[in-house]
Image (tube, rainbow, N blue to C red; front, top):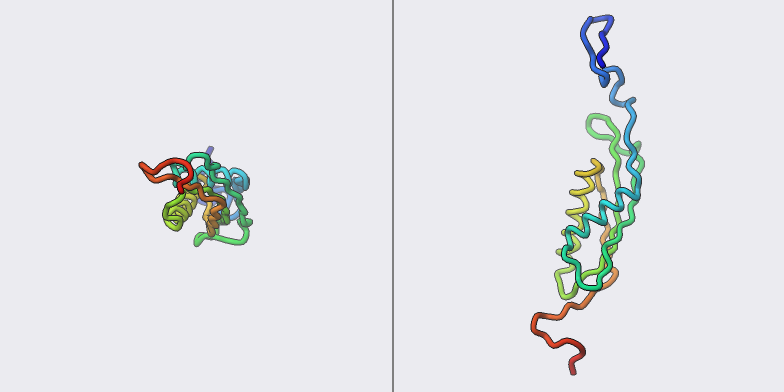
Length: 139
């Protein structure tokens, strides 16, 4: 659908009728962002250690009115908290950094939301035996 401007006689598209600051916006539910963050954490940690619970994410989405892009359009921003169980021994810092990167990347790509903070909490470590090590308790 196009409209013709009375002043200039030129055709205008439907988006030209409403200024960008007054257009509606899609609201992404916090639980959707949490599910995406949890999936991103699973992707970063794959494969999970045996018996480990899958990562869990809680999300706080800041109201879009607080932040604006350089063009003046509102930006939704999320703060994400991810709870993990990791296999041990491992480089815990590197695993947490990988989760942070993946969460920021996937949430940004899938819902166009900026992630200002990713807090990673390691709730439990699962001891994984070294290859060739005896199983069970050792004296």
